[in-house]
Amino acid sequence: MLATLALASALSAPSAEPAPPAPRYYFLLFAQQSVPFVPRTSHTYATYVKATPTADGKSAVEQVTISWLPAEGPVEPLRLRSSPGKNFSLEETFAIAAKDRARVSMWGPFEIDATRYDLAVAQVRALDSGAVRFRTLDSLGRNRSVSHCVHAVTYTDPNLQWLRQPVLKVGEPGTAKLAIKYAESGAFLSTETHDWLLPVLGLDKQPVVRRALGEVVPRQWR
Image (tube, rainbow, N blue to C red):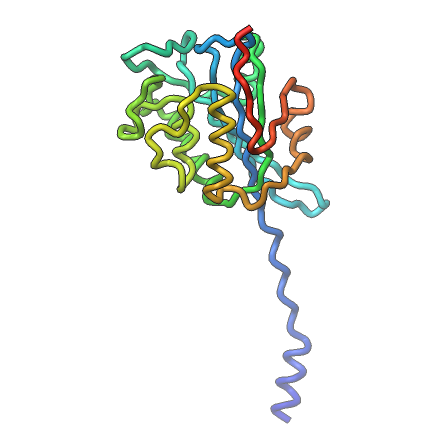
């Protein structure tokens, strides 16, 4: 009798709710520089995306961008003193590119893990706090309160944040090599690009040049 009651109770117990689909995370790396090339227009930045599946089969998308530049005025490559910095949004950075007549190159979107997205969110908070200043000739990673645009991005990656000088060339050529370093360090879950994100982020309406991993991007002087 007891066994019969136990079986009936088990059969009548409500089934466990299925776990909600886990979010997925993505990374887009950008570089811009004027054509013809002017050093002060060179810039490296990145956008990180969190996509959470919803009940209707779509995804709720959150994104943060790390685009670290002087808060006021253009970049002064040889300036020795640091200046207040500002983390610009993706849209604001495209506006700067248009003003500088800069070409924008993009690598990705590549899928990454939650750790890198969370580190990016924390980095944005640090940059927005005013605790970090901008200098093109930064401290080579020894003092994170003074940073150039590349270190502002690589500090969010567990395998690249230790690099004292992530790239030797600024702008597109250097960022092309940085993209390879990300891939070789295991930052990407695969090298497949997730192009469905482009219209979601408005990138289908921007004059962005898609770049492949390993592609050599030459400097254009004229």
